[in-house]
Image (cartoon, rainbow, N blue to C red; front, side):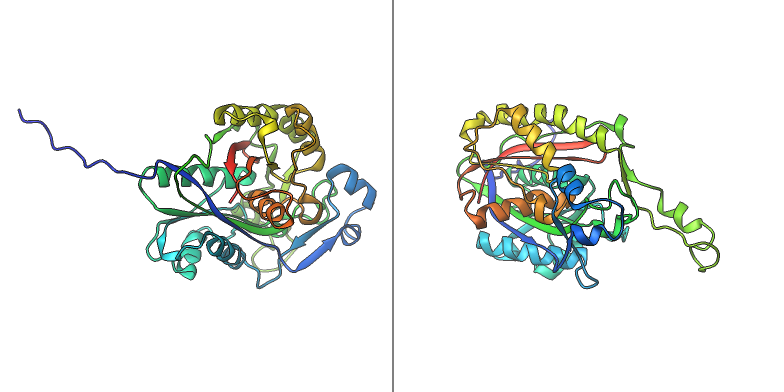
Length: 344
Protein backbone atom coordinates (compact mmCIF):
# COMPACT_ATOMS: atom_id res chain seq x y z
CA UNK A 1 0.00 0.00 0.00
CA UNK A 2 1.44 3.39 -1.00
CA UNK A 3 1.91 6.16 1.51
CA UNK A 4 -0.99 8.64 1.70
CA UNK A 5 -0.36 12.12 0.30
CA UNK A 6 0.99 14.63 2.81
CA UNK A 7 -0.58 17.97 3.61
CA UNK A 8 1.69 20.85 2.67
CA UNK A 9 3.10 22.39 5.89
CA UNK A 10 2.12 25.92 6.80
CA UNK A 11 4.97 28.28 7.59
CA UNK A 12 4.35 31.31 9.75
CA UNK A 13 6.47 33.90 11.51
CA UNK A 14 8.87 32.61 14.11
CA UNK A 15 7.72 35.22 16.62
CA UNK A 16 5.02 37.86 16.94
CA UNK A 17 4.63 41.21 18.67
CA UNK A 18 2.27 44.16 19.03
CA UNK A 19 3.04 46.68 16.26
CA UNK A 20 0.52 49.37 17.17
CA UNK A 21 -2.10 50.24 19.75
CA UNK A 22 -5.01 52.68 19.72
CA UNK A 23 -7.97 53.66 21.84
CA UNK A 24 -11.29 55.47 21.76
CA UNK A 25 -12.95 57.10 24.76
CA UNK A 26 -16.53 58.39 24.46
CA UNK A 27 -17.14 62.12 24.66
CA UNK A 28 -19.54 62.11 27.61
CA UNK A 29 -17.87 62.17 31.03
CA UNK A 30 -19.85 60.84 34.02
CA UNK A 31 -18.29 62.21 37.24
CA UNK A 32 -19.05 60.70 40.62
CA UNK A 33 -21.28 63.69 41.33
CA UNK A 34 -23.68 62.49 38.64
CA UNK A 35 -23.61 58.92 39.94
CA UNK A 36 -24.65 60.27 43.34
CA UNK A 37 -27.92 61.43 41.79
CA UNK A 38 -28.70 57.74 41.09
CA UNK A 39 -27.62 56.07 44.32
CA UNK A 40 -27.21 56.97 47.98
CA UNK A 41 -23.44 57.15 48.44
CA UNK A 42 -20.57 59.65 48.49
CA UNK A 43 -17.64 60.60 46.32
CA UNK A 44 -15.27 59.50 49.07
CA UNK A 45 -16.96 56.08 49.34
CA UNK A 46 -16.73 55.47 45.58
CA UNK A 47 -13.09 56.59 45.37
CA UNK A 48 -12.08 54.56 48.43
CA UNK A 49 -13.92 51.45 47.29
CA UNK A 50 -12.86 51.51 43.62
CA UNK A 51 -10.46 54.35 42.84
CA UNK A 52 -12.91 55.74 40.28
CA UNK A 53 -13.41 59.51 39.96
CA UNK A 54 -15.21 59.51 36.61
CA UNK A 55 -16.09 57.25 33.69
CA UNK A 56 -17.01 57.67 30.01
CA UNK A 57 -20.42 56.66 28.66
CA UNK A 58 -21.15 56.36 24.95
CA UNK A 59 -23.77 58.42 23.19
CA UNK A 60 -26.24 57.21 20.53
CA UNK A 61 -23.69 57.56 17.70
CA UNK A 62 -20.87 55.88 19.63
CA UNK A 63 -21.81 52.29 18.90
CA UNK A 64 -19.62 49.25 19.57
CA UNK A 65 -18.69 49.22 15.88
CA UNK A 66 -17.99 52.96 15.67
CA UNK A 67 -15.77 53.01 18.77
CA UNK A 68 -13.92 49.96 17.46
CA UNK A 69 -13.28 51.54 14.05
CA UNK A 70 -11.90 54.68 15.68
CA UNK A 71 -9.57 52.75 18.00
CA UNK A 72 -8.46 50.36 15.25
CA UNK A 73 -7.67 53.23 12.89
CA UNK A 74 -5.18 54.60 15.39
CA UNK A 75 -3.58 51.17 15.92
CA UNK A 76 -3.26 50.60 12.18
CA UNK A 77 -1.69 54.03 11.69
CA UNK A 78 0.83 53.41 14.48
CA UNK A 79 1.70 50.02 13.00
CA UNK A 80 2.21 51.67 9.62
CA UNK A 81 0.47 48.95 7.59
CA UNK A 82 -2.17 48.85 4.88
CA UNK A 83 -5.46 47.49 6.32
CA UNK A 84 -5.58 45.08 3.38
CA UNK A 85 -2.66 43.21 4.96
CA UNK A 86 -4.75 42.37 8.04
CA UNK A 87 -5.52 38.67 7.89
CA UNK A 88 -7.85 38.45 10.86
CA UNK A 89 -10.12 40.67 12.96
CA UNK A 90 -10.91 39.53 16.51
CA UNK A 91 -13.35 41.54 18.61
CA UNK A 92 -13.66 40.83 22.33
CA UNK A 93 -16.91 42.15 23.78
CA UNK A 94 -19.86 41.20 25.99
CA UNK A 95 -21.94 44.27 25.20
CA UNK A 96 -22.66 44.07 21.46
CA UNK A 97 -26.40 43.52 21.80
CA UNK A 98 -27.00 42.10 18.34
CA UNK A 99 -26.54 38.34 18.51
CA UNK A 100 -25.59 37.93 14.86
CA UNK A 101 -23.77 38.74 12.68
CA UNK A 102 -20.55 39.26 14.58
CA UNK A 103 -19.73 42.96 14.84
CA UNK A 104 -16.19 42.06 13.71
CA UNK A 105 -17.44 41.59 10.15
CA UNK A 106 -18.79 45.14 9.99
CA UNK A 107 -15.58 46.51 11.47
CA UNK A 108 -13.41 44.58 8.99
CA UNK A 109 -15.45 45.89 6.05
CA UNK A 110 -15.35 49.49 7.25
CA UNK A 111 -11.59 49.38 7.79
CA UNK A 112 -10.89 47.90 4.35
CA UNK A 113 -9.59 44.54 5.53
CA UNK A 114 -10.83 42.77 2.40
CA UNK A 115 -12.00 39.22 3.01
CA UNK A 116 -10.13 38.76 6.30
CA UNK A 117 -11.79 36.30 8.69
CA UNK A 118 -13.61 38.26 11.38
CA UNK A 119 -15.24 37.00 14.56
CA UNK A 120 -16.30 38.00 18.08
CA UNK A 121 -15.25 36.34 21.31
CA UNK A 122 -16.96 36.57 24.70
CA UNK A 123 -14.40 36.38 27.47
CA UNK A 124 -15.44 39.41 29.52
CA UNK A 125 -12.55 41.31 31.10
CA UNK A 126 -10.04 38.70 29.91
CA UNK A 127 -11.19 39.18 26.31
CA UNK A 128 -8.22 41.23 25.12
CA UNK A 129 -5.80 38.64 26.53
CA UNK A 130 -7.74 35.84 24.87
CA UNK A 131 -7.65 37.75 21.58
CA UNK A 132 -3.93 38.33 21.92
CA UNK A 133 -3.36 34.60 22.44
CA UNK A 134 -5.40 33.76 19.34
CA UNK A 135 -3.65 36.41 17.25
CA UNK A 136 -0.21 35.19 18.32
CA UNK A 137 -1.14 31.68 17.22
CA UNK A 138 -2.53 32.89 13.88
CA UNK A 139 0.62 34.85 13.03
CA UNK A 140 3.08 32.17 14.10
CA UNK A 141 0.93 29.42 12.62
CA UNK A 142 0.94 31.03 9.19
CA UNK A 143 -2.79 31.77 9.07
CA UNK A 144 -2.36 35.56 8.98
CA UNK A 145 0.39 38.12 8.49
CA UNK A 146 -1.25 40.70 10.74
CA UNK A 147 -4.20 40.37 13.11
CA UNK A 148 -6.32 43.16 14.55
CA UNK A 149 -7.40 42.55 18.15
CA UNK A 150 -10.08 44.82 19.59
CA UNK A 151 -11.52 45.03 23.10
CA UNK A 152 -14.70 47.11 23.13
CA UNK A 153 -17.59 47.64 25.53
CA UNK A 154 -20.75 49.71 25.98
CA UNK A 155 -21.33 48.56 29.55
CA UNK A 156 -23.58 51.55 30.18
CA UNK A 157 -26.22 49.53 28.30
CA UNK A 158 -25.94 46.80 30.95
CA UNK A 159 -25.67 49.01 34.03
CA UNK A 160 -28.48 49.25 36.57
CA UNK A 161 -28.19 52.82 37.80
CA UNK A 162 -30.25 51.96 40.90
CA UNK A 163 -27.84 49.21 42.03
CA UNK A 164 -25.58 50.79 44.66
CA UNK A 165 -23.01 47.99 44.33
CA UNK A 166 -22.38 48.36 40.57
CA UNK A 167 -23.81 51.68 39.32
CA UNK A 168 -20.49 53.50 39.79
CA UNK A 169 -18.19 50.87 38.28
CA UNK A 170 -18.66 50.49 34.55
CA UNK A 171 -17.59 52.61 31.60
CA UNK A 172 -17.50 52.47 27.80
CA UNK A 173 -14.67 52.55 25.28
CA UNK A 174 -12.57 50.63 22.78
CA UNK A 175 -8.92 49.60 22.57
CA UNK A 176 -7.17 47.93 19.65
CA UNK A 177 -3.83 46.34 18.83
CA UNK A 178 -2.15 45.11 15.66
CA UNK A 179 -0.28 41.81 16.12
CA UNK A 180 2.22 40.82 13.44
CA UNK A 181 5.54 39.11 12.72
CA UNK A 182 8.69 39.83 14.71
CA UNK A 183 12.36 38.85 14.56
CA UNK A 184 12.43 38.49 18.34
CA UNK A 185 9.84 37.24 20.86
CA UNK A 186 7.33 40.03 21.55
CA UNK A 187 4.47 38.11 23.17
CA UNK A 188 5.18 35.63 25.93
CA UNK A 189 3.14 32.53 26.64
CA UNK A 190 -0.45 33.50 27.39
CA UNK A 191 -1.40 31.95 30.71
CA UNK A 192 -5.16 31.64 30.43
CA UNK A 193 -7.96 29.62 31.90
CA UNK A 194 -11.38 29.57 33.51
CA UNK A 195 -13.24 28.47 36.64
CA UNK A 196 -16.83 27.73 35.65
CA UNK A 197 -17.70 26.73 39.20
CA UNK A 198 -17.89 30.48 39.91
CA UNK A 199 -19.86 31.40 36.80
CA UNK A 200 -22.57 33.17 38.82
CA UNK A 201 -20.23 35.51 40.70
CA UNK A 202 -20.39 38.06 37.86
CA UNK A 203 -23.30 37.68 35.48
CA UNK A 204 -26.18 39.23 33.61
CA UNK A 205 -29.30 39.27 35.78
CA UNK A 206 -31.37 37.15 33.40
CA UNK A 207 -31.62 35.73 29.89
CA UNK A 208 -32.84 38.06 27.14
CA UNK A 209 -35.82 35.82 26.35
CA UNK A 210 -36.90 35.84 30.00
CA UNK A 211 -36.79 39.63 30.11
CA UNK A 212 -38.75 40.08 26.89
CA UNK A 213 -41.33 37.48 27.90
CA UNK A 214 -42.35 39.49 30.94
CA UNK A 215 -45.70 41.23 30.94
CA UNK A 216 -45.33 44.69 29.43
CA UNK A 217 -41.95 44.05 27.88
CA UNK A 218 -43.29 44.01 24.33
CA UNK A 219 -46.53 45.98 24.22
CA UNK A 220 -45.81 48.50 26.95
CA UNK A 221 -48.71 47.36 29.15
CA UNK A 222 -48.39 46.69 32.87
CA UNK A 223 -45.37 47.55 35.01
CA UNK A 224 -42.12 48.82 33.56
CA UNK A 225 -39.75 45.98 32.70
CA UNK A 226 -36.15 46.42 33.78
CA UNK A 227 -33.48 45.76 31.16
CA UNK A 228 -31.13 42.86 32.07
CA UNK A 229 -28.08 44.27 33.85
CA UNK A 230 -24.79 43.13 35.33
CA UNK A 231 -24.61 41.87 38.90
CA UNK A 232 -21.49 41.11 40.86
CA UNK A 233 -20.59 39.59 44.22
CA UNK A 234 -17.96 42.18 44.96
CA UNK A 235 -16.19 40.62 47.94
CA UNK A 236 -15.98 37.20 46.28
CA UNK A 237 -14.51 38.72 43.13
CA UNK A 238 -12.08 40.82 45.17
CA UNK A 239 -10.72 37.82 47.09
CA UNK A 240 -10.44 35.71 43.94
CA UNK A 241 -8.70 38.43 41.97
CA UNK A 242 -6.21 39.26 44.72
CA UNK A 243 -5.16 35.74 45.68
CA UNK A 244 -5.62 33.72 42.50
CA UNK A 245 -4.72 36.31 39.85
CA UNK A 246 -1.43 37.23 41.53
CA UNK A 247 -0.46 33.57 41.05
CA UNK A 248 -1.46 33.70 37.37
CA UNK A 249 0.53 36.89 36.87
CA UNK A 250 3.59 35.24 38.40
CA UNK A 251 3.09 32.24 36.10
CA UNK A 252 3.14 34.59 33.10
CA UNK A 253 6.38 36.15 34.31
CA UNK A 254 7.94 32.71 34.85
CA UNK A 255 6.79 31.46 31.43
CA UNK A 256 8.42 34.48 29.78
CA UNK A 257 11.61 34.09 31.79
CA UNK A 258 11.19 37.60 33.18
CA UNK A 259 11.43 38.87 36.75
CA UNK A 260 9.28 41.67 38.14
CA UNK A 261 12.22 44.09 38.35
CA UNK A 262 12.80 43.72 34.58
CA UNK A 263 9.36 45.07 33.71
CA UNK A 264 8.84 48.50 32.21
CA UNK A 265 5.13 48.52 33.08
CA UNK A 266 2.38 46.58 34.83
CA UNK A 267 -0.96 46.88 33.01
CA UNK A 268 -3.68 44.94 34.83
CA UNK A 269 -7.34 44.95 33.89
CA UNK A 270 -8.79 48.13 35.34
CA UNK A 271 -11.27 46.48 37.69
CA UNK A 272 -10.58 48.12 41.03
CA UNK A 273 -7.68 50.18 42.38
CA UNK A 274 -7.59 48.13 45.58
CA UNK A 275 -7.21 44.91 43.58
CA UNK A 276 -4.33 46.50 41.64
CA UNK A 277 -2.60 47.58 44.87
CA UNK A 278 -2.99 44.11 46.39
CA UNK A 279 -1.55 42.46 43.28
CA UNK A 280 1.44 44.82 43.33
CA UNK A 281 2.13 43.75 46.89
CA UNK A 282 1.68 40.04 46.15
CA UNK A 283 4.02 40.24 43.14
CA UNK A 284 6.57 42.26 45.13
CA UNK A 285 6.64 44.71 42.24
CA UNK A 286 9.42 47.31 42.63
CA UNK A 287 8.27 50.91 43.08
CA UNK A 288 10.24 51.78 39.94
CA UNK A 289 7.77 49.84 37.74
CA UNK A 290 4.98 52.13 36.47
CA UNK A 291 1.46 50.79 37.05
CA UNK A 292 -1.61 51.55 34.92
CA UNK A 293 -4.33 53.33 36.88
CA UNK A 294 -6.59 54.31 34.02
CA UNK A 295 -9.65 53.27 36.02
CA UNK A 296 -9.64 56.63 37.82
CA UNK A 297 -10.82 58.45 34.68
CA UNK A 298 -12.27 55.61 32.59
CA UNK A 299 -13.97 53.21 34.98
CA UNK A 300 -14.09 49.47 34.38
CA UNK A 301 -14.33 48.98 30.60
CA UNK A 302 -13.94 45.18 30.69
CA UNK A 303 -12.28 43.90 27.49
CA UNK A 304 -11.23 47.43 26.49
CA UNK A 305 -9.42 48.30 29.70
CA UNK A 306 -5.93 46.87 28.99
CA UNK A 307 -5.40 48.37 25.51
CA UNK A 308 -6.88 51.70 26.66
CA UNK A 309 -4.52 51.77 29.64
CA UNK A 310 -1.59 50.71 27.43
CA UNK A 311 -2.25 53.56 25.01
CA UNK A 312 -2.46 56.10 27.85
CA UNK A 313 0.81 54.94 29.43
CA UNK A 314 2.63 55.19 26.10
CA UNK A 315 1.16 58.60 25.27
CA UNK A 316 1.96 60.01 28.72
CA UNK A 317 5.51 58.65 28.70
CA UNK A 318 4.94 56.48 31.77
CA UNK A 319 5.96 53.53 29.61
CA UNK A 320 8.16 53.48 26.53
CA UNK A 321 8.18 51.63 23.24
CA UNK A 322 10.23 48.47 23.61
CA UNK A 323 9.56 48.14 27.34
CA UNK A 324 8.33 44.82 28.69
CA UNK A 325 4.84 44.96 30.19
CA UNK A 326 2.95 42.40 32.24
CA UNK A 327 -0.74 42.40 31.32
CA UNK A 328 -3.51 40.45 33.04
CA UNK A 329 -7.26 40.41 32.59
CA UNK A 330 -9.85 38.62 34.72
CA UNK A 331 -13.61 38.63 35.03
CA UNK A 332 -16.98 36.97 34.46
CA UNK A 333 -16.81 33.27 33.80
CA UNK A 334 -14.67 33.32 35.83
CA UNK A 335 -11.94 33.72 33.20
CA UNK A 336 -8.39 35.06 33.11
CA UNK A 337 -5.45 35.66 30.78
CA UNK A 338 -1.97 37.03 31.47
CA UNK A 339 1.19 37.52 29.40
CA UNK A 340 4.40 39.52 29.15
CA UNK A 341 4.51 41.63 25.99
CA UNK A 342 6.86 44.10 24.34
CA UNK A 343 5.17 47.49 24.05
CA UNK A 344 4.83 48.91 20.52
